Image 1 (cartoon, one colour):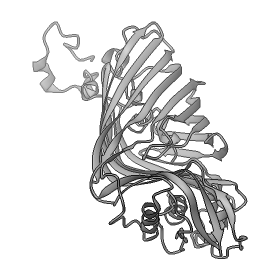
Image 2 (cartoon, helix red, strand yellow):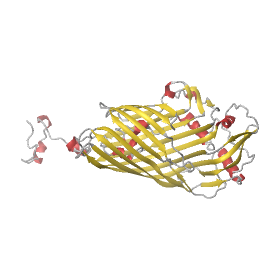
Image 3 (cartoon, one colour):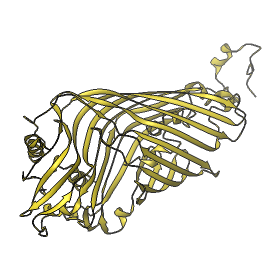
Length: 483
């Protein structure tokens, strides 16, 4: 894209969240939402399987509750390395307008992962399990942005010498919003002695809601009179004006889990009568999964274009559309249909039971999407967690590294039907420059015994019912009450 001396109009205003440069949009959302990454407190808790199946579908097989129902949940994780709330805590809402920019970085990045989850459930039926979930999700990322140039768009910019040139190589600014409804099915694949292997698959129907992507493979950004001009650029862009449906698609997830059980489980049936209508414990488990494998075919109010140094008008029109807040009417396009791939991730997890409700967990998430795709990229993540969990209570302390370099200390609590947590709790309690905001919650109902397991034979005169006389025969084990 040859935009020689074409003004790049991307001034950031305090009272707007502009689609044009999504990295700034991500941080603006931090300032107005303050509402994660992988929502670790929900994903690894043995008592919240309908949430855990989004990270690994196989967790619903041999799940602790017989039926787990999530009524509603929500969460958001927003982080970057250049925009921040100055000297504040996230609980001090009055300081949210004090936005600063760190211009000392060579390249900038930003990440957004937010979702609202509707009704979801998972059900254990012996050696099989089934699940359902619904959600609206928005993910976005920005990578390799020239941070010194971003200082021009603060409220009090320092002047930059004319003809200063910044390289813009492999720069990516992308976001995708969609709704999804998914079905999960799983089963015990192998059981012998103390070995238990489970597997499950999820199929999702996707409904596209929004898509923006700007990918600059290489280019130069020159400053003249504190204004920017993009020189000798080439890359591509795609867009879909927000709407109830801008396209549709499918995605899937596949997961497996190996458990080293505490006792022989050769004849084990989860929640079976012969096992007290409960599940059996494990000493340790290891699991792996691939999630969000699929995409959305964008085809309504949309377009895409690949540009080179010869396409002055194309790039100028696209950047002006970004400046206008995302009105892409009349933008030059090569076509109206393209595929925005979901942020594919590969997960591995190890969970060790120290007994008495204490567990140690290790989690690794590696993004597997192509940087050149029109869809967003997820964060890489490595986390080590300690947790204490019981039927009605759980506390979790995760220490995580986002993109293997940005450390966070989190906290999650489950009290009866409510789980609330964050993967970065320090901004809530320690005053500092805040680059990351993260919070999530879920409200649920759980049933631990199948309906058939609730029937007990009468014992003693106080529990004896006269009608039971007519249901017994002389060969019945409970032919007579115990008195």
